[in-house]
Length: 235
Image 1: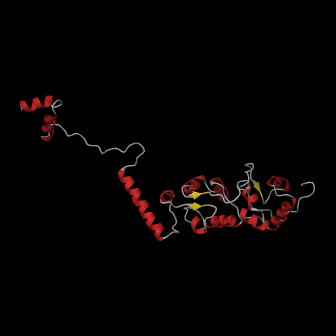
Image 2: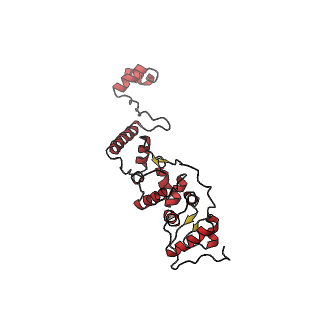
Image 3: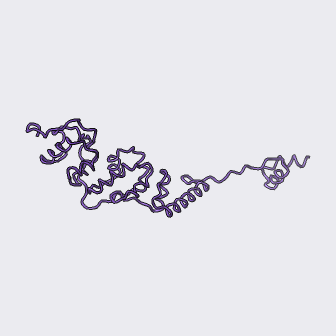
């Protein structure tokens, strides 16, 4: 007992004595902590799980190129695999891969594209579809805004003009000109415009002009009766 007590008193100086005392249960073994990941590095198990999820998505996309992505994490994995969506050349199948996008919204985008209207960035996409910012941000890893041809006209003031209700004098800043302005008023008297694509098709407006209206106009339900062309006083 004296030997054991003496060793206990000096074990902190003798590594061999510490090993003997641990082996006989006289002092507890040191706790072993798993190695901690460095700052900004995910744990190995989490990294492995992410690799598995990415490989699984790659297999699904190979089997079904039109696969609908479930959430923002799936969007990031698809982007890491090299998938991209060219906003100004995307097909309906391309758009429908994005989580949360509705067929009616895809139809609007395709009608604008058919009219030559291009979107210059995520702000344009958000305004055209009136989407929450979080949804567009979730899509960004996949989106590419390539411009084809001449750049869009400069954006106008932030106030939004209601094209179904605004009087002629409020429509003048849109740069329509007298003839197109009269045609707009006559056409909306036959029925309110549904959206930018509907407006462009009915008035046969150039794409550059429509692009300059993104985020500047809105389309509330129109008045019940027809609207007369502006008088000389309103012009």
